Image (cartoon, rainbow, N blue to C red; front, side, top):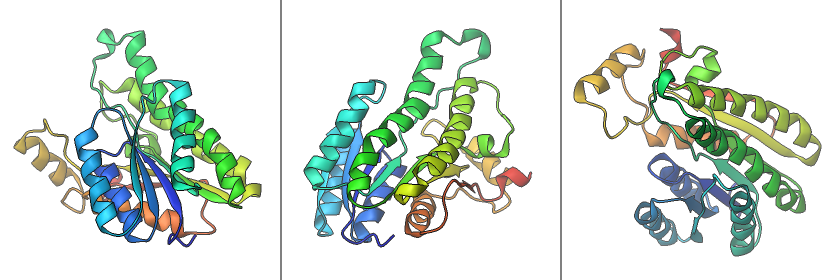
Length: 246
């Protein structure tokens, strides 16, 4: 797909998502950035995109609400005048010991990471069909892509991300006749969480064959490569610096 002149919706636009949106704009796309709480960060990204000469809009949405998922997609398409691309990065990543897990913990992870990915895609498909095709990118995780839950304390997250991989494959098969290609990125060490200690950051680097965190630009580059392909669909690309090899 040629990205210049296309319209994209990116969810989860704090940190990595903001860089993805800004990168799409550099390739000539207009972008709707969805957020739940990170209004300041998203508005900064919108300003960056507008300075680059592309249209951008910030849309607040709580993707735990099924109706909000549909409304978000429709508002993005209405404001941009069309919709070719959906990049669903919204995710819940909370550490919680098994014995402390609640139904609410389970629902939160599954609702945002998996159900919202399905609902946003379902809402986006009619808009993409109107443009004779489109692209959907989901966000999985390197552990789910490797089929091994390496870390205790992330049970709902792991299950949700494994579901995202299955969703990506099934959607790719369903939507291929409409020229809508569906893929996922499975990130490993891209950005350290804000609360990670210096020692923990170094430990991740030491456990990664390439010896470093990837950074937002690497994630955005992977998204762009998948969007530009006209023949890759149903794939989950592991982006982990070789971490799965150790």
